[in-house]
Length: 276
Image (cartoon, rainbow, N blue to C red):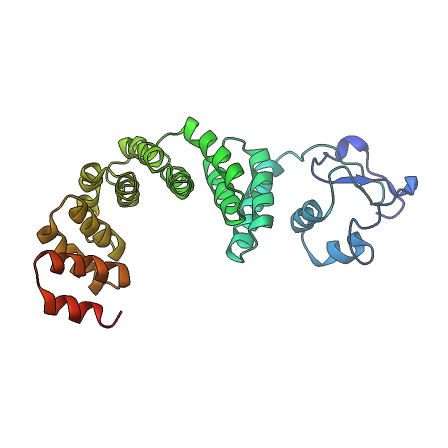
């Protein structure tokens, strides 16, 4: 291939990287990569797609790199789906490694190829939450729920944000909407019950929490607290005992002590609270 130029029409263009003819003698700005020629360092050891991802993470938009005789400007036919899958795969890898900022960048790249993709959207929002950017996460989630009000993961994440901001009633309403599409989803039932309980609407919370009973220690604890809020301590004892047995800890013990106090079971109160 040395000294032989391919016809321009035979080289489909790329959108995310710009490779310019070596004859122009243009170089990337200093600081774009650290240490040596990135093409010589990266390309021989890896696939072009992996280099493409590395390039996007390290080089600002519009930076030119040197490569002999090739000029790319738009996506290769057939690479569209491969690139989407690559961004998603690399994003998931960064997320598993705890690098949520890099994962968010990669999920945004995936959304450039599939702007309406629900999986990439809620994963992006989850990473934004992990980085502490609740405002951007909420905006992304509201956009997704506007298209799909029954999307469980998006509803759960946005409800988490709203409850943290003392907007429990709004979170509960959001979860009720999602439950219309997925009425048997135990996660939605549990979080809707939690939200209504936080909003001071124990009767609404109860209708959901009783369906989630036995799902987890947290579900049993919330049901027990709901019974206490409804002034039914005798009904609260069973779920609270189950929550303690499942490892719910101090909060369940204190709630159960409240049940015993209401029934004047003093010795049981002492036995329960002494280790705390």
